[in-house]
Amino acid sequence: MSAVMKPDNQAERKAFYDRIDTRNVTPLWEVLHGLIIKEPNTQAKPYLWDWAQMKPWILESAKLITAEEAERRVLVLENPGLRGKSRITNSLYAGLQLIMPGEVAPAHRHSQSALRFVIEGHGAYTSVEGEKVFMSPGDFIITPSWTFHDHGNPGTEPVIWMDGLDVAIVELFDAQFLERPDSKVQHTSKSQGESFARFATTMLPLNYRASSGTSPLFWYPYDRSREALATLSKVEDPHPAHGWKLQYANPATGGFVMPTIATFLQMIPKGFRGQDYRSTDATAFTVIEGTGTFTCAGQSFRYGPKDVFVAPSWRPWHLDADEESVIFSFSDRPVQQALDLWREQA
Ligand code: GTQ
Image (cartoon, rainbow, N blue to C red; front, side, top):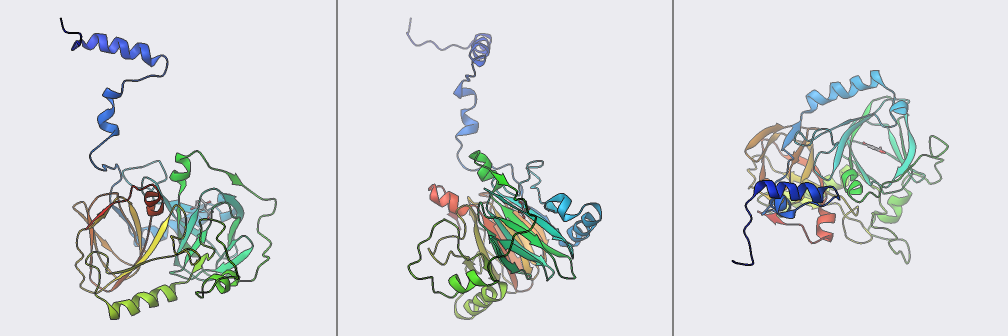
């Protein structure tokens, strides 16, 4: 008789599994092929949140709750394949935040890094570690991990922006902290534009050494980024999948703007028919200008200004433009690259 048996007794196996289960042990061979797989197979789905539908709901939410009571009055954009998890991708959170004239969203700080991308309205500010910046549509703003921030609207219009946070990444590591100060709004100790003067002019403070992985510049106004793309579009051919696309950079290191989230701005010309592209970093997009079609994994969505759409990890997608379009996007690429996981395929 061979020393190696080939047991095929299901009842015996089950009895064994039940015995080891009582001490929190489980057989790998029953789960292996769901753990170690050939390629990404995300639950996340491609989807588009249509601004014409979202805007009235966002404004309606102001009749139900104040920014102060809500702490943050946000409608969360949940990926249809990940409902109930507050995620637009498996690793990232996105939401649309509203602040009405006269309101403040009280100060707090948390381990999660956040980005704001301004969608609509003027006259609201966000304050980061005592420095206020007034937001205009198309502006990209960073709230670094563990920095106090509050938002306010001393103006006359509702202001809406998209939030992007690394909630699920911080949760993966069980490394989340939150602190609320005694005062609702921060004493603004710095003048507006201080960090812009220090970091946005291709110069740096004397002997500057980066002290964190987040960009010391936290406000990237739209007009400058838009102009850069317009200039590039006159001097070079568009990339077959991305058009003219730039990544926002930490001016002190040249790296991404946050340790966990990369941000991008791209322009595609009128009539553009983009090639299929996929990468392991699932990506959320917001349209600033233009109309066209986003196609991902066989599903097509018409896009227009202020729509948000999402491409899951490793699902092929492409963009077709009816009009010249400018699109902001963000993903967890810095984390994947730091861990040597990131892949792309054109
Ligand atoms: O503005 O600090 O959309 O803490 C979710 C959590 C925004 C914020 C969100 C937050 C914030």
